[in-house]
Image (cartoon, rainbow, N blue to C red):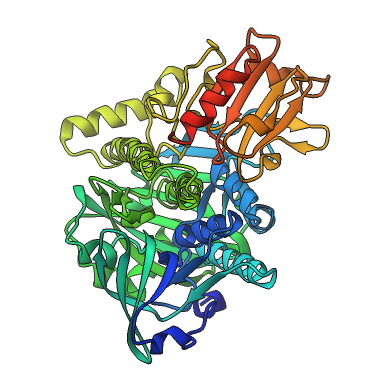
Length: 535
């Protein structure tokens, strides 16, 4: 088993405030030191907010868990200071293959265009992601930033009050209490914070289970995603194969609903299944085994007073499509800049209601796509099975049928259509960079556009040297002038200009587009900034 499973990242240490008679008060407390909680901690710290992270463990997550890191998550991670490290370690893949029975019926490329700093996906074990994020926090601590992580601090009770939140926390040295202005709950699907408040998920548990197995083996399989429908080694079910770093391969095998989970996880039952897939002659070592049940559920609201839920504590989706952890990181990306403006008094608390609106929208979108994937992968009737198999057979020869094949629609960021933070869109195209959409990346002479935005609002000026009085704006704004040249002209017109010769874009701190115009108008820009701040 990998030594990463046992690595202690934030060893328990008794803090001075554990002996205080009255609870010590904190600005922001984050419960949960998984990828979502750690990303939120780094983001808030970079915004100058004092953060305390607590977690009942002190180690990395056991097993590879969430392994598919999307392009959007890598772009967010780049801004947080860990994107390059994740890319360097991860396994890059763009190619996916769909197999029916034992034959390939077609393949697809997830990132067919150039001009992006990051690939469509990398595969990287969750324990590496957590390790890099904690290392980044240690680096920030070394630079004097007020952020701390407390391991073996288990939340026992949460009490929501009008102007603060009170937590009772169990440690090896007993129970103590602390209070905070805002609590961000990133404590997973069995969230203690959620249950303490008497809140629950709404949604559906699908009737199917999958075996996850991480194996190490020395093989020369290509770096790609392979998905099998009805293979001979798992007849009537499905299977998935992914490559990870360190010679580790992720295998998912559909098992059906009526199973004994503990029995299926036993090595003597797992090994024969893997040998049937990989071949009797192939040597491999079993590193980690788990079983998951398809689930698509979410809370009705992600904001409850001064408590904000993010990641698996707020929503759960079936794993096909890499929508869980990626969506959780995007929750944090959406939340942190808004919380910073509220803490500063620059925006009203109602700005955080847009976190609820936008990320509930994203969860609904993910659940819809995940549910559709589940229905295709595990048909619920004989008629559905016949339809699925007919689609698979047709897709082998006819391209029109391939969009109907659903082996897990892979994660893409949500466009916040209808958000109250959006301003009127004064350009008809391109649609990919419409108001509410995540900003596309763009190659420049000295790097890429998205890694220049920083942590605040930005104005992109395409093909115009507009002089803007930044002092008239209610918040600091970064101006980036972008002139087309022979190397990026096609990218600029395809992604930003379309039929226009020049344009002005207002970009939110989470790199979503708040407004765009084919002309410069200072008053319109100022108004759009105020709108995007919730004022």
